[in-house]
Image (cartoon, rainbow, N blue to C red; front, side, top):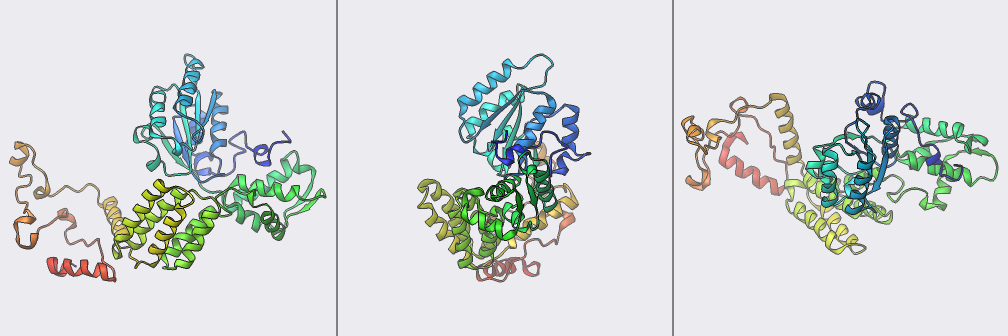
Length: 423
């Protein structure tokens, strides 16, 4: 055991020892209640690295006393999935708990791999626990997603990380034999980025570099050790989420120098290129939007080209798109409009569709005046005629508010010409 990394030695074995995610495993949390009741459905854990996804899956299996199988989406194929399912079937006895199949990085599974899980999950041959750092709505096929609950895990906060540090230096079989003093912890917390595994890796690195059993943790010492050992933290760099945030904010702030610098930090750190490309597509819609609609076309082309070209040349495509987005005029009018519309829908509920806007595919619907007074825009001069398109309760509501830039001004002028004072 002493040869294991600190992060593995400190892996919790019970829910009471588990740090963080109290919204899921706290005393009154829903997931904890299901675990304690011994009735756990298939579920997917979505969250950043090092927040306890694998640990939680192992605790569930141990608590339920269920056979535990694990697959990595990086190295496993359809054949491996089928073999594990056959093993699970042979280990399943009447009235016993379903074996648990844990799949790490399930977002990397292909459609065919995910399809191969469906029947086993649906019939209860296995209870699936998936772990992903990517939004499962985009990365997991709909039939599988509909059979699983999705639980969101959060980065560990400062209190969680400090609790983990103190537990490590007082309870770990190796570290408790030393005299470790946590004089300064800012660098440890900053470089860990809310990742428990990274935090413990850095602590172990700093402690192991000391010749004496008396170790004082200082910020300068942590920074020095990390500079000497850049592989001590994972490929996302010291602050994976902070760097992508700085990248997007630099684009939003129209600073191509800042944007290209943070892009270089991600490229040098080995960040997944498709992760960067996805964020560029989002930025093109959220921050540039109608001020330059071509930005979305370029960002989408960047994503497609990156898949065709691969690495390292893909960095050039990312750079071109990054600079273009940073230099583009900015507008979030579409982003604001959909947010306001969603808030309106949540507040007003399912208002009926006006009769003239309804389709009338049957005789009965036509007799009920579905579509009766609808005016076909192409039958009128300029392909436009004034009529109401909102539910009567919302008439006069203004959701899209064009912003001040040349491209949107043209849209605003056209809307004013058509609708008058409404815009």
